Amino acid sequence: MAITQAAPVLAPTTTETALPARRRKKLTPSRLALLALKTLAGAVIVLLALFPLAWMVISGFKLRTEVIRTPFQFFPDVWEVQNYVQILSDPSFVRTLALTGFGAVIFTTGSIVINSMAAYAFARLEFVGKRIVWPLVLMTMFIPGMTILLTSFIVVTKLYMLDTLAVLILPGMATAAHVFFVRQFYLNIPSSLEEAARVDGCGRWGVYFRIFIPLSKAPFVVVGIGSFMAYWNSFVWPVLTITNPDLFQVQQYLANFRGERSSELGLLMAGSALAAAPIIVLFLIFQRQIIANIKMAGLK
Image (cartoon, rainbow, N blue to C red; front, side, top):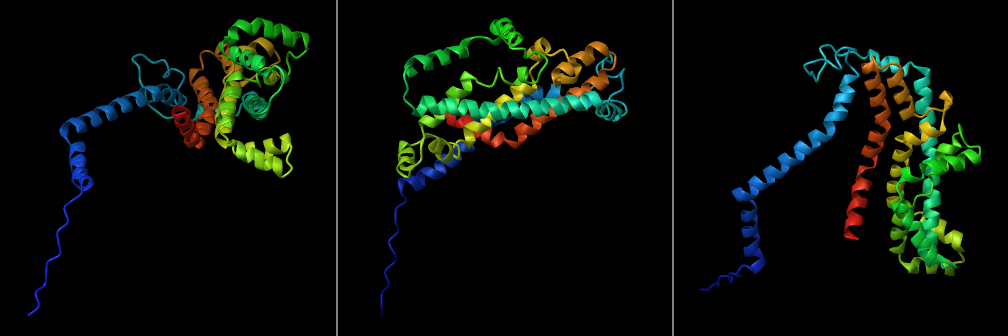
């Protein structure tokens, strides 16, 4: 009669015994309470951040007297779309949105091109005075824009740029913060890629367009969104340099609307909500890239 031997029982490893312990530790009441507290705090912060935006959008559906009703009422008694229909039927508002969007696209494109080219030069090229010019470029990051507002106005006046779309686009394209951000990204691109391209016969322009541009999607998203928002939300500079109503920007138009038709608050809220829509849509489309770049910047 054959005697079968039982298979030896293997002792659990340290990892196997520690894993259930860790899992049980995550389910302790104190950890659950901490998680619930963090979730509640995050929900409160989100509600506080979204409340002004939600109130603005909903106020566009209110009648003129309901916007400033006392006591405060968040939702209207009757939802009306007349304010949105009326503001979209205004040719001057639609023209202002189109003109601002057109200028923002040109400004964003130029900002990406100029700042990325400057970043490539400071990251990869060696030229006379580079160690002197680069600190001077960085110093401009610490100069508040309001302090050079008057001198900038004098410059564009002498260049006969007032009441033109160029005065809104050209002065702000080059930004030291964007050059610095893209330069830090370019410094992390392996030099072996550049050397391989040079061996294959690429010049400096070929390396820039064939190696660096295709790899620059992440920083270009950040620079592009920042530039688009800066142009779309600008108010002081357009008010200072644009007096022709046909060239009014969206924030300038809303400010004039508030001054001339201050009693039509529901219409103003509808226009403000429509003006904020492109920025919100842009963020929702590129939110993954924005968060990924924030994480990347934190790791570096």
